[in-house]
Image 1 (spheres, rainbow, N blue to C red):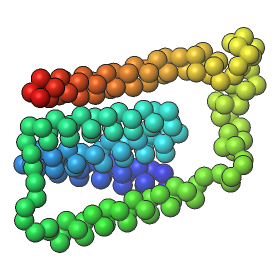
Image 2 (image 1 turned 30 degrees about the horizontal axis):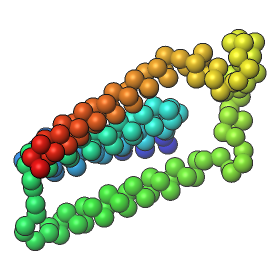
Image 3 (image 1 turned 180 degrees about the horizontal axis):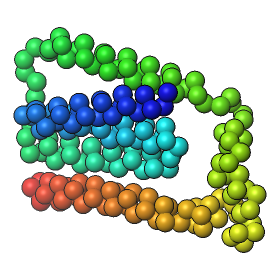
Image 4 (image 1 turned 30 degrees about the vertical axis):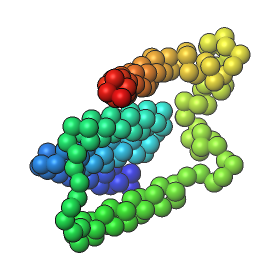
Length: 183
């Protein structure tokens, strides 16, 4: 079942990429590429990598803010004609499909109050809890997981987060300096 959901999400990602490549308006291209990032985050969640999914979502949001800010500053696009009925129907169809995916994902969550790692006896978290003190010597299991078992992963995530934040600050700071000089 998860393979089918991932296949559907990948199809939507390809459609969004094609729309992004074919559109002439920069702002529309940015909005069309949004499902690619968000659906890849959902795929990471389905594959059991919530930390990578969170990083993907943060990077996606910051990238979207930067791209929209740069696009609006460069090419102000407004909709002056009457709205398209096909676009409205397509929007509602995407919202409906997203709602169906969300409801399907909620079915697979464990009951409230029961930890997910108890469903799978081979889960890495069981090894971390049982052998964490012996293998790492750390009294705090959370720190031993973050720094010992998954140290490189944590370093990569932190690097991605700090780089995206610094990129957003650099772009927004230049714009603020220019605006301050003009006033």
